[in-house]
Each structure stands twice: as C-alpha cells, then as structure tokens.
Length: 377
Image (cartoon, rainbow, N blue to C red; front, side):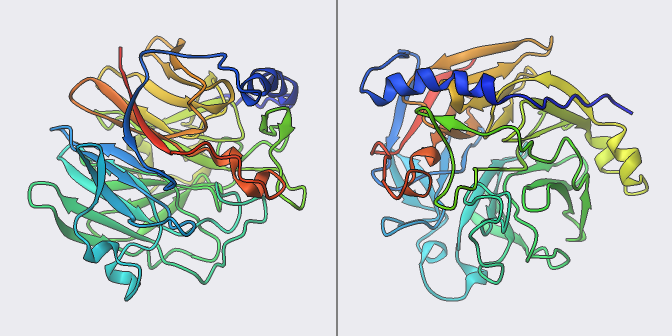
C-alpha cells in the first residue's frame, strides 16, 4: 500500500502565516505582482466555478447566495458576465430540473463540452459550513449538465438518483472522455464519486480514508484569527479540489484541511472490480503542498494549486518540485481555475474567510469580486 503521511501538528505552521495576513488587514500591501491581470469586475456577486474553452471562451458560475445573486452560469464577454446558455436556465423560479439552483463547478473537457455541476451545499464538511454544516438536506438537487459549445445546447442531464442526497455534497468534478467517466469530490462524505456517463450510475470510493478526510489539527487562520463560526466551530472541508491530467491518466485530489496532495491512476478508478482497500493501495502521496481550494492540470503535466494562506498560486511540476507562480495580496481565497489556449490561467477569488459567518457577523469582503488571469510557465 502506498505510504500516506499524516501531519498532526500543522497549526503552528499555518499560524505563522497570520503575521502576513495581519499586515494586509492594516491596509499595507506586502505582496504585489504585475503578472496578475484583472479580467472581470463582478461587483458584489461571488464567483466560484471558472473554465475556459479551446477557443478561449471564459465561463464563470455563481452560487445562489445573497440578495445580489443574478445568474448561476455566465460567459464573460468584453469583461461582462452574460447569462449562459440563456436566460431561461438562469431564471430564479420554476422547476429546478430545468433551471440552475446553485452552480458549484465548471469544466471544459478535451472534446470542448462544458460540464456544469449544479449542486447544493454539503450537509457537513462543505465550503459553506462548519463541521455540522448549515444546509437543509431536503433543499436543492444534484444535477450535472453537458453543454455542447459548438451549439451552446444542453445535450444531457445527470441527476445522481442513486446517491444519498442527505449525506452527499458534490463539490468539484472532472470528465474523463477516454473512459466515459466523471470524477467528483464529495466533501460531505469524504469520498470520491465515479459517475458512468453512459449508464448514469455512480460508485462511491475512498470514503473516509485519511487522504479524503480533513485533518482536525489543521485550523485555517487569517488576520491572526482562527476561522470559526459563531458557535466556535472551525472551518473544515474534506476532499475538495481535484484535477485530471490532460491525458486522463492521473486524478489528483486533496482536502482543504490537509497539506499533502494525492493522486491515483484513473485506470484503477475505472475498475469496478477492485475493493476499496485495493483501490486505496494505489493512492500515491505526492508530498506536502499547502492549504488548497482548487486544482487544475496543464498540458505539460504541471498541477496548479490555489494557496490562500500566503496569497499565492503554486504549481507542482512533473519533477515533484513546488513552485510559486504568482503572489499578490489581492488573492483572497483563490478558488477555481481554467486554462486557455492563450497561455493564461484564469481563476476566481471567493474571499470566503471574510464572510460574516467567520467574522462575528461583520462583512469584511473587499468588493468588487474579481476574475484574474496570470501567464502560465
């Protein structure tokens, strides 16, 4: 079985970063990079999902939060978010089967289809709640849409009818066009969900394993203050960010509350005959990285990781070395990625740590929310 390293005393290392965040909170700018380029001003609307097509169409999604919510899914055209694929899908009322409820993640596959995960917050371990969560398990429904970008039409909708929606909380997804599978992170159950795109059925794997479960010793700290809600519960997320290499060979994943990055060959995820113990034996520990929210792979095999604790985007190169791509104080909870054929990495900044939920009911978000881009190596 692959060795899995568990780091039990990480609080001091993370707290050390609080000095930097405290400097930022006093109005100073300890980090600035001219490489960081604003792409879209989103006002008070928080973006989460980001993806880019082969011809550099930029798509951005918004969770259904607050009075400023307008559209669930947009295409950024001349810096402005326009409803996509149309106004009907972005209406706020009507049958939830034919409209967006809470768009969580986006992904453009190798065949230039846009996949849209319309989900609800997880009942536990989610990015929108403490360890016990805040979502009503009866609210919302999971669905995954396949949109053909040649026609901008929805071609298929998956509804995850065989999942226990009272416990699952789907967060990120990647599409393996070679094997006809979708891989989804499920922080609600600390698991990976494998969806058969032909049959529409799912398998849940690696549930509750050390590499899919948040480490309770890792407590996120910003501005010298631990990220805890009004009840004193710390922010915690199980397996969350995921990435699929362009050749569909490796699937990367990690919890937010853990520093190590893990991967597994997709041929094992595709093999339904393996027991969960056998599958776990093929998980590889890629070593210590950082507190991470989003992941993505490029054509060169680099794995990009958001790094909110030090306001940076990092990447793991194929030789196993961790590099800093850009560091800037505007990178407040960098979240989801898309890579264009123009050589730029696009991403959202969710600023989740500045929400009232984590700041004694005080809104500390720095408006406007922005989409940024930075040149990749």
